[in-house]
Length: 116
Length: 113
Image 1 (tube, rainbow over the protein chains, first blue to last red):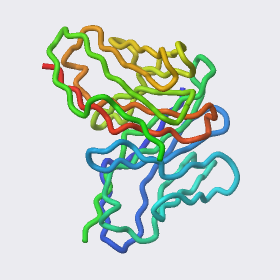
Image 2: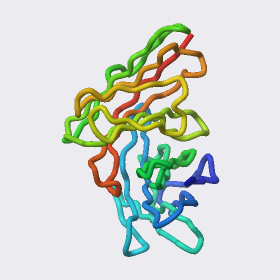
Image 3: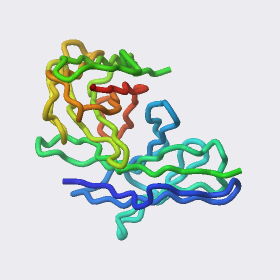
Image 4: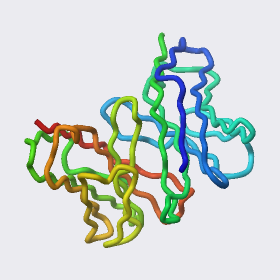
């Protein structure tokens, strides 16, 4: 069975500074990896994904993520944080269920707080 | 603009009641999903459906059932609500390609008293 670990419940960063939200995963076969963001009182929004190819993927709102196969990590990054980036971030991996169909397994989430 | 809608944003029910949560998508997606979201646990998959009348259990199906009679609609049913089913419920849809992203509804916050 697949799993995702987000080791930090909360990340605090000052506006303008770079940010990193960590994610490690465990899955059989090639991983499909995703990041989603949840703003207060809203559903999840897709940010970016890694399927294959370049290890650095770029997504919405200036976010990017680096896939590292040897470390089984997919950390989310942004060069310069904005107060509006404050939200709950979820990493997810697509893996095969017992039935042979793929489904997403989510991490526990990391709350990002950007201070002005 | 693609859209997934859920019938209620907030719902309060009593223990033992039968509860229906409805989800509708307008993207003609084959796959639909129900998750519950709890603090510190992230999202956990309850059930998903890959076609009309087809369903598969997710990680935590106990106490829930689902119905998909039409492609655009996926219902989650709590046969006899219990207090430990108080949670945020999120519906999502996706096309048949498993490396495409899921689109989420706004969620239903269910409180069972």
